Length: 117
Image 1 (tube, rainbow, N blue to C red):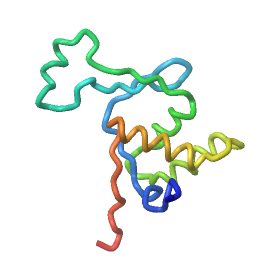
Image 2: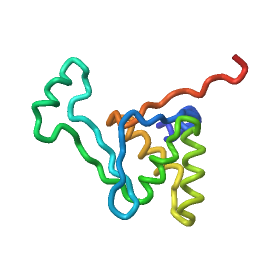
Image 3: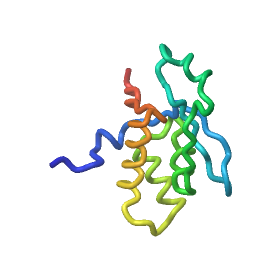
Image 4: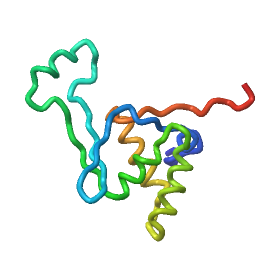
């Protein structure tokens, strides 16, 4: 069984692909269209509620705001650990959350460009 997160995953750079808006108590709400395919996007105009709204807690908001397209998953986990000291398994929890955001198409994961190229 491979341990998660491995070094390859921790080196990935998450980039948000969807919008967010201010929510309650300074936390964010992510907005994800119910249909992501451009081919079927015309259906969104016909829907009463064309988007999912996902309310984040303080920790989720910190992770989302740290996903700036420059920092790796490991760097984001470190920033979250500093913002929420004393929480156990910060790296694992942050990596799992980022993985689920990627699976839900809220963000994309990229390899950092090689600085030597």
